[in-house]
Amino acid sequence: MYERNETVDEERLSEEKAMLDDIASRLSGFGRERGNLIPILQVIQERHGFLPPHAIKMVAEYLGIAPCEVYGVATFYNQFRFNPPGKHPIKICLGTACHVKGGDIILENFERKLEIREGETTPDREFSIDRVACIGCCALAPVATVDESVQGHMAPSKVEGIILGFQIEKERKAREKKRDESGK
Ligand code: FES
Image (cartoon, rainbow, N blue to C red; front, side):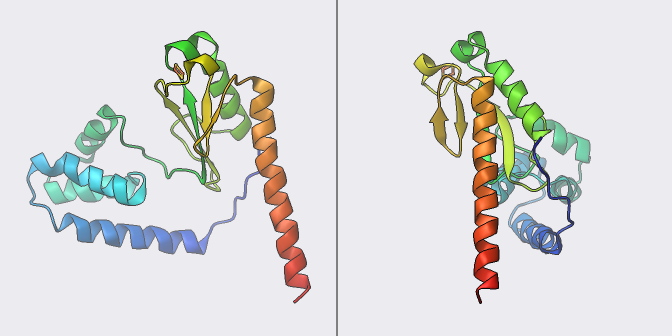
């Protein structure tokens, strides 16, 4: 099972506050017409990598429309995401060739291993899972990308190996940090 760090992070709260301040200042650069909705969402997504729930409310208030209308438009276009991208983004191809070779089973394996669904991010923001359309490596199907590197001929055991690899690396870094701190 993937180990989560559940501690509430002060840093994250101030990060969120800074994000909302930034969004508020960007909004002021737009007129309050409904036609500006998509450009506003694009600017927020480009700057922050996702549309936080508070941002949806802020945009709705700014344009004088209902939050569900903003949400409805944002979900219609799959360029928008609603969770912060993970430090290690995992994308599973579900194009035709990958689908035929069991891409959905690979997606399910990552979901089970990380205990999140596609479009979500682990609470410690280490991993996010998304499905993508054909990325042009059909001969390697089923394919996933992990940290932008292409992983071909994916199998459930490879999913285990990838996540385990990250955990081992994380533990190694934590040990090194501890050693460095105790050596000071
Ligand atoms: S369908 Fe997955 S790489 Fe083409």
